[in-house]
Image: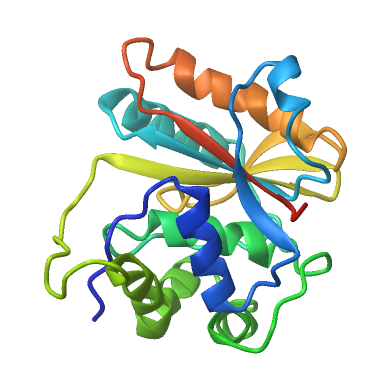
Length: 228
């Protein structure tokens, strides 16, 4: 079993990782410097996915449990055309967020033969738990990030650590805004959106995350956009 290193919300590192996994250089992650309309206007378009980094907390865990309980009581039926995987290992939520970003945008992203394309093809007909288990066993994908982190540092100096942050992804699919969280049992439908309004509508949900943690500053947002 691979031991994963925690990912930083750093577009440079994420882009090196995506390239190593086979994602075309025509797409890249960029920082979203603010969540209000004026700041969002600076983000290149089209936006294919938004990734939020936030602190794990009691408030998040309570919201997650309440949200899942409510959806189960309503007889929630997970959408079949949304690629969602459950987190199995610690420290892989960053990798999962990137997989969610790419796997749900295959019609738009040129994905070269390689680790990620192989994983997505093998996982596409599995349920969320099986997708997560398959990623757990895809040691080459996890080790690819370790190799990037090691570049420029002394061998053996990287530290295995468990961090108290978490990544989730927001995507557009079939007219709806979905939140994809490896710690949740199914995708969360946040209502209607369009490809053109994905960033603005996802930003509203990100602001709700921040509002639940008024004393915490550990938030960061990046977006998957065309390379300029």
